[in-house]
Every structure is written in C-alpha cells, then in structure tokens.
Image 1 (tube, rainbow, N blue to C red):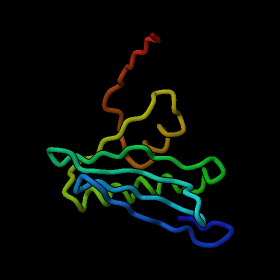
Image 2 (spheres, rainbow, N blue to C red):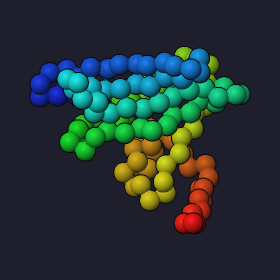
Image 3 (cartoon, rainbow, N blue to C red):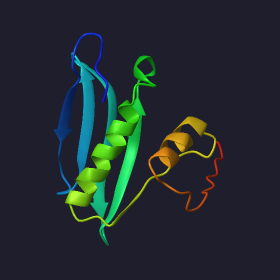
Image 4 (tube, rainbow, N blue to C red):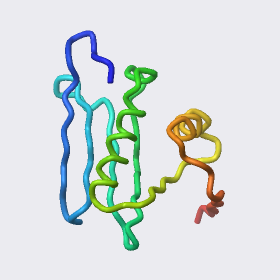
Length: 115
C-alpha cells in the first residue's frame, strides 16, 4: 500500500459481537480514510461489506488493500469463498472487484415505495 504525504497510514482492526466479524480501518492521523467489514457466515462463506475510501484518498490502492486484507482474514478463519454486494451502476467498484478476481453471480433488484 502507498504512503501518505505525511507518513505511513495506520491500520486498525476491530472485532465485536460475532466471533468472526472484523472491521479494518485505514487512518491518517485521527481520520478514518478507508474501511471494510468482513465476517464468516454459515457454511464457511466469507462476506465483505461496506468497503469505502474517502474521496481525497481514492486512486491510491487503499480499497484494493482493504479487499486483500479482508480476503486473507476470511481465509484464515475458514472461508472457502467470499461474496459481496455492489450497486449495478457503481462502475468504479465493479472495476475494482473484477480486478481482484470477483465475478458477477447475480443481479439483485430492490423496490421502493414512499408512504
């Protein structure tokens, strides 16, 4: 992973509740600049969720680093596969996920009705 202009980024891991749940955060100083959550579901299926990098820090390899770190964590905790969800219109995320080896499994439709 790249370094910030101010020096090395700090990587933190947090675990709570579920025994295999973790969040990995990338910080610059006290500011969280990126994060990803991961856990193992029934059947040893890994889940990655809420991968984000704040706008000023994008295009520096942080999201890819978070994905690889989450996948390594899941594999170390018994996962044989990993899944994630992304909006079909999010071309940047789709490109990132394809670049690390994810393949589209299915497309989900959600419906909304204001009351």
